[in-house]
Image 1 (cartoon, helix red, strand yellow):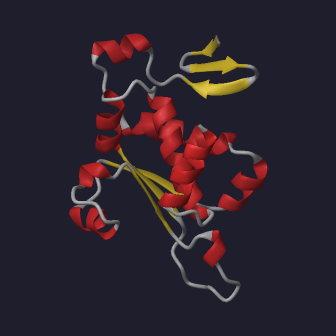
Image 2: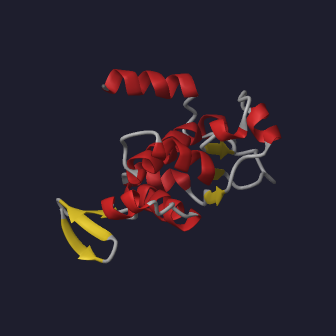
Length: 155
């Protein structure tokens, strides 16, 4: 990997954000919402064109933590268990007769992501990219069980 400028590096002509250097991680620097947002947007930008084009005007936001009602609605007991959420009508359920719906949205939750990152050997980039791709999977109509099965099969 070679340094291109500041916090961007290249590996085999692909750009990767280098938001948290090893020195910053060891120094205790806590990732910000802007760090998470930058990684998420770069992940979406790197998606192959057929997938990226189908995302259309999907909204990406980073919030501190989900509220208790949101966590409960998706079957979780505590908001810190939710690191990302897709809200919208998945492609397999969209209709030409559909109108007046809110834009599709992927929300990433900062505090749960940081907590998970601190407890795993994975880089922040790997973790956030995994979460974003998981939420994009919901856009395509995959359930959590479907995506977990695909991950198991890919290992």
